[in-house]
Image (cartoon, rainbow over the protein chains, first blue to last red):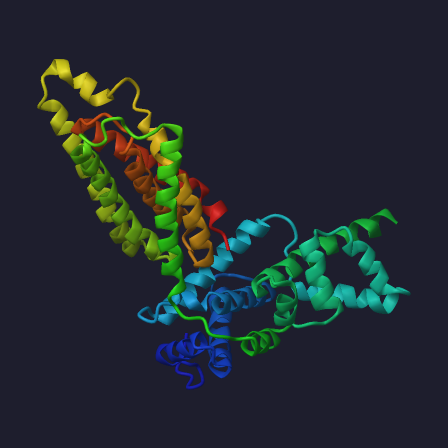
Length: 188
Length: 215
């Protein structure tokens, strides 16, 4: 996968960045995640995920790597550890979503929400009405990150939930929201 | 949110996260789970009345259970951390535990065959039905719940296998607890039914693993 590109970080380099990330070094954390993102993208595409799904999976895996970094044993090979998590995130996604039903990437919902904002008179209150129908966790996560435009980390700090919790709640919430929008549109 | 933004946000909020926490939680789970199991047994069924005189037999049965728990524990520790799709490694990890269980069953069978035919049934069945196959998982339940708590913090990626390992470990701990009550000291009974009880706990763990250990 490294394909001879000098730019792609190798096992030893990634491993040392992981140790940095465990020590709480933000620069090493950034380098680690930046170094892993293209590898993960290639991994998920190789496994047959659509490009937009692959990007979601890349993000979920990066969050998992970040939140579970304390579980990495420095004696282990880093890439084996990373790919085991990537594989798990993919299987977990199948379990969550199943093979049936629509599986649209998160960006589509963002576009849908953005489109509503330009078309409707007072979009935020429309969205707010629909948001009331969501489970509390999903509603709060969407409000904080998508409407108040906090970062995932800020939302996590504010709610006390883990960043991956927030991300997943947003994902599920937006999906549910999309269904609600669809059903009200049909009803009208 | 683009992946770059996500990475930037994660890196900004990074803090220290050393690699030792998993072991602490598992230690807590094992010690606390065993103690809660003991208290549960004492309160509900009580220890066997002759526990003082029978101490050597109790120790032998608890030791046999502890041996299985040790093997299962090594497995659970490995499966608590990310493990990929490596069939050979997984077989190699499980092999010791499976050999141990088969050896115990074989010892039970051989011991049974060396007995006089008239004594066999009592040695095999104990005092009626071997309820220990259900009681062993039951008294392992506190350990199992605490281990689930420990493993959710970890990052198991093979949930069915991790669940089975947690079940076997909890079953082993449950058998250690149960040995304080169990008044049947026949080798056949212990090697066969204790292993069946622990195996039942492992099977339950495998079934519930994907549900309970998701993260």
